[in-house]
Picture (tube, rainbow, N blue to C red):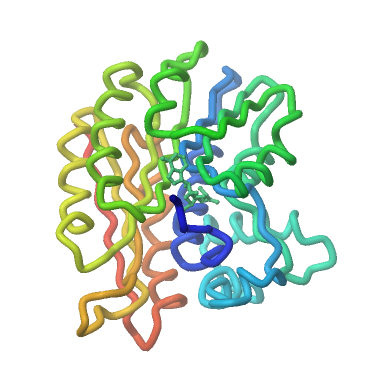
Length: 280
Ligand code: SAM
């Protein structure tokens, strides 16, 4: 049974990194008129109210989007992201945090399509209530790793896949790599964005290397650490976004952004970043 609920973590530094990179990718996809598909294999509930009990319990958003809300000195990709979050918060107070489906849904054009997978029954119901009736969207209460097979390649041969598992099962790492390998064999030119947690575990440390080996046609890797490693070996230090076939200009746009985020979100001076890429 799945225990993870994204509502407990919403708007934290990991969401900040993930959603800045995602918006950067989608903005570049829209530079061409030709339609694309956005596929979210682990969609979550879609959107979150920060006053809700779950978001308030750990209040992680206060260490993420909350620290950016009043800033006037943001690099352009951060400013664009915060401006976007503001469109969900009429009145100026931070109350709603859009998840990846809401963010992507708000930038898709009439010709684009969205496919969402969510396994948790409660989060699926919330997601379906918002997106289930939209003509250009399909929402499925099923396994996103397995579901990728059925939606690739998209008919338009342009697509972005966000793979954002909860990593609550150790098997998620292996499943992720297997699903990606299969997805690339079906749709080699797709843009694949993989979020992963930065932990003191072998699986987490090895993942970027495994993803690089899957991406001979080009990749970008952005990692943002905001907390120091704990002596007991537990806890999240930060997270990463690995993009296979990144759109042109994405890495360049993050050059000044990641050091700024590390300084702004790093706790007790623990902020660090990695930004690397390969284009054959
Ligand atoms: N992508 C969302 C966002 O950025 O707003 C957050 C997603 S959250 C990190 C991961 C979600 O994946 C959880 O809602 C969890 O219930 C769901 N999940 C876990 N295993 C899954 C699977 N095999 N297929 C689809 N969804 C899954």
